[in-house]
Image 1 (cartoon, rainbow, N blue to C red):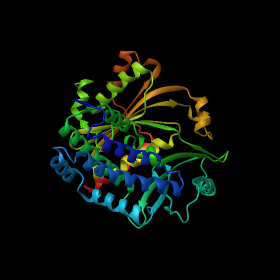
Image 2 (cartoon, rainbow, N blue to C red):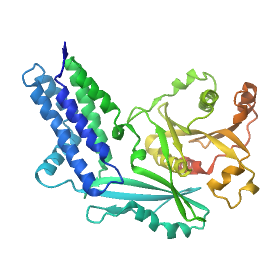
Image 3 (cartoon, helix red, strand yellow):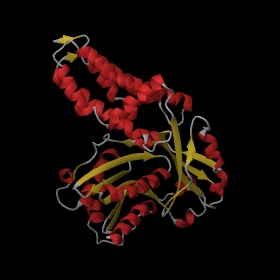
Image 4 (spheres, one colour):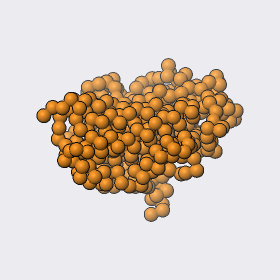
Length: 408
């Protein structure tokens, strides 16, 4: 039976409304607006179950609703959502706190500046914070300085990152509504349309760093800031790890490095370009691919610092990376910043790198002009191994593997 408005439609509409509020919540938005978006989010999120109860009141699904509600929504995060909804409706607007962490990157790691904390009482435009960094960055006596600004949002006086709670709450509600949909088993065009719109929403479907991190380069000679433009491919929260054996379809023989090479050499032959990509291998024989694009190299330095921080807690055992790179004559690029060097590039290579928890290292570089020549590819892959050279941006990962190896 096809209904114009199915039993699940009101709840899906409220879920869509709640997520629409989070879509407007952004790191650069002023406190007044962001607090309003959060207040509306909590209200609409809580209304999902209210309207669903009313929709199901005279159906045979009340007991199913209660069972699935208790299974998915009765927990600490669900309780917190209810408490916040009651507070913002009856007591006061959400008490939002913003913290900004600025990290300056160098070859060996990152220097973290003192954390900046803001509430609605003392917020300032972020552009003024960036401008205030000029004296500090000039004092480093570098041609260019890479740094990033990461934004964290909290309930004032509490230590739980709001993003984690939001993603957890959205996960739980999605599972609850999915199980209700299976139980009700009805067709509804309006519900299908809402589900399609929900799946296209940004907040839940892009990596956290795309929402809350900005990367910058400061060119000291010109005293000019450049903010990175970026892109990323992402499988979604908790959906990114797959068995390592999945790589066998590209190259059943050889080790993970060989499989990684063959896979991306094939991609490059088809497309003549590719996104820089990390392959992260975990101790449980799964891996994760992280592909991202960037306009300045700060992003790749930040990414490898972030991976290094995860190595111990996530049981990472090796990290592989592929990217397109320029080669230069060192004498041609002395005293030139990144933008000035490009016109002096001699060649372009597709570069592959690997480091594992035993400090085993590998690297290969393929001339992109010869990438369709299979004899050339074989000559590079199976040449007598030479001393591998890993780029400076991988140093934080190398150092962390070395620390853990010494510790064990």
